Length: 109
Length: 117
Image (cartoon, rainbow over all chains, first blue to last red; front, side, top):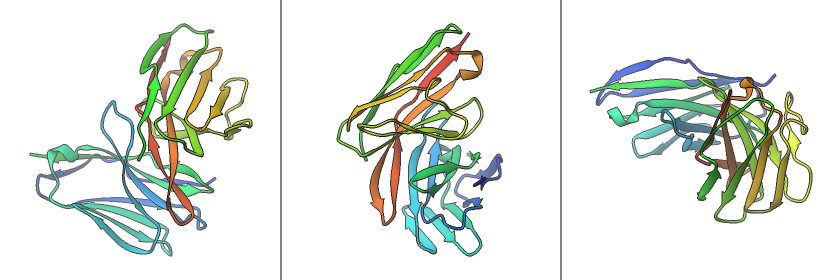
């Protein structure tokens, strides 16, 4: 059974801080990894994709991938209350996505 | 990305009935998928909707319960048949757009919130 693990949280950080969200996966053959943001009552929104080891930056978001450790993370710099949402890690497995259970992030004003 | 719409956005249905959910995309796409998100849980893939052929179902999902149509590259339907309260979920369609060397980036529609009483 291919699995994607995330800490359910909530992860609470003060406004302006760095939020660090982590994800591990079991399928060593996975090549592509995704972070989705889901606000309550809304559908998931793709915010980052990564397929090479190392860091990928997009604005305040940085995705980090370590295939040897089967580990993906998402850093959110200068966190804002509007970043409060559930963040879902997803791993590609033969063109299908396997989702983690999500980490709820709360950014305190 | 693509603009994806779903109808209905929500519905309340009686047990034993069926509901068909529509998914429309503003451009032709090869890959379309149907997911379920049960209350407080993450997303689970139901099936891949294949244009011109039968859908590919994941373990635990069967065609008799969740028949899927994909008549063209911009449209798909998912039917939830003979519903029970356990089928109360959000049903989401997604489309895969080529953006990575060996994968697709998936974008989701707004979802259909189904309550079965």
